[in-house]
Image 1 (cartoon, rainbow, N blue to C red):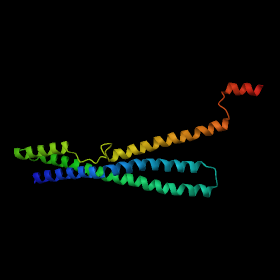
Image 2: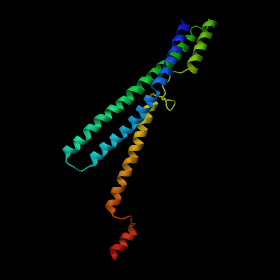
Image 3: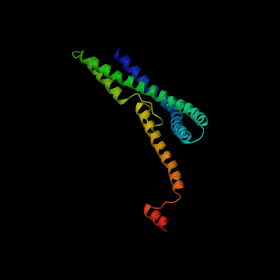
Image 4: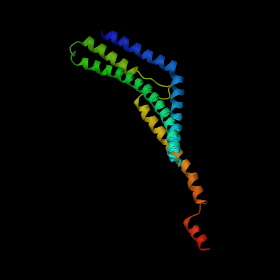
Length: 183
C-alpha cells in the first residue's frame, strides 16, 4: 500500500510540474496584469473619492472600478488559494506517513519504505510556480497586498505633490515669505 501511495505522490508531482509548464506564462501574465490593473483601479477610486464634485457623480465613478477591483482580487485569491491548498495537502501527506512510522517501530522493512517515501516528499514538493519567478500560494497573496499598498502610496504621494506646489505658488521658505510681506 505504501508503494502505491508513493506512486500516487510521484504522479501528483509530475502533474504539478506539467501544470507549471503548460500554464506558467499564462499565470505570469495574468498575475502581473492583475496586480497592475488592481493598483490602477484602486488609484482611480481614490482620485474619484478625492474629487469635490457632486456626490452622485462621485458615487458612480467609484462603483464600476470597485466592481472590477473585486473581480481581479477574487481571481488572484482563487488561483493562489487553490495552489496553496494543494501544496499544503501534499505536505500533510508526509506528516501522516511520519505518524505511521511510530506505531510500526518493530517492522524494519516498513520503516525503510516510509523513510524512502519521506525523502521522496522532501525532494519533490508539490508546488505551483510561475515560470520560476514565484510560487503561487498564500505568501504570494500577502506579497500582492504589499505591492499594491506600496504602489498606491507612491501614486498618492506623487499626486499630492503638484497640488501642494500649485497652492503655494512658490517654493519659498517661511523667512523669504516674511521678508517679501515686509517690503
